[in-house]
Length: 231
Image (cartoon, rainbow, N blue to C red):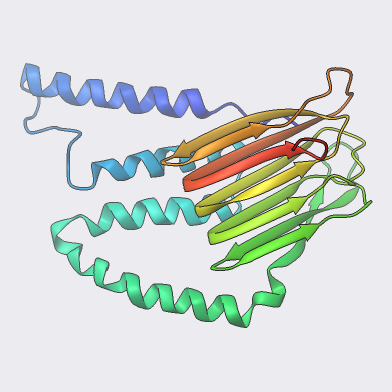
């Protein structure tokens, strides 16, 4: 259930590329290389989401985060300054679609186990421009995917049945999410907060057999994880 560890490789290649760029300036291979180009700060969004996609694959949250970073980068280029004017209409589009498809913001995603070919389902929760509280109930949990965009989502898994290690992928962009885990499980976080916070209030049981891996990307948002018996 552990994610593929491509993060170090990608970050290492970025630093090597920067080093080569400045070396070229010094020895005369080229001139004018700098990391402080227009919109350079958007790399703090693009790189973490690229790492998340490489390690965990595409999902809605990773895709939205990467698009946001690319949009901010392109919008800072002189020939694309007009893109900032599209922020308001795009926001209106998002509000309209969130109203139309509000009842469909929860669905199941089919996943096939590679080792035996059996199919199981992972719940996918989305919260856009709204607030939601979800009680999972006494069902077997195989994992989950959470995406919030200008929204607040509370997912209560305190009654969930966990019979194996599971992965929960979380992407929060403005506002945040809270996950309540069942007791008697371990929690292993992997967080990339960008002007946000990952709050670990989980009381992991050292005698627990199964682990919940939480992969969180937090952009101007908080992601909080706690157990059902934690106040």
